[in-house]
Image 1 (cartoon, rainbow, N blue to C red):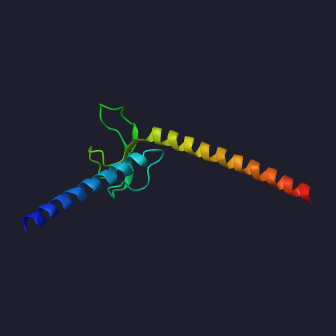
Image 2: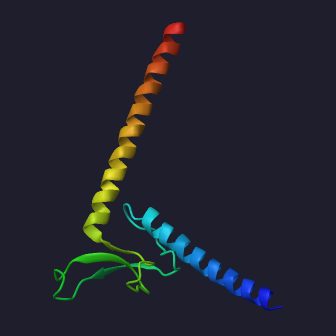
Length: 114
């Protein structure tokens, strides 16, 4: 009987650790550009302005509304998020322009076949 209860304890602990690792993965994988509207913990992402002396007063952050400094919540400098998002959008536009160029070439080839 004690083996079953020990296994249950280990299983519960393994599930807890896996959940923590899954949340950490979501944080690190989603740390490019603007964060989603929700933190992996379920909290909302809000915009906050720094009021402390340790940081530049007035610096803006995108932060989970239930933020704890444990690595499981989103807190991102607003300027960095915007810069990353602009870079991502520029890359998307570049890829789409390449596709449009290819499509124009294909249309021209089809027109020449007629």
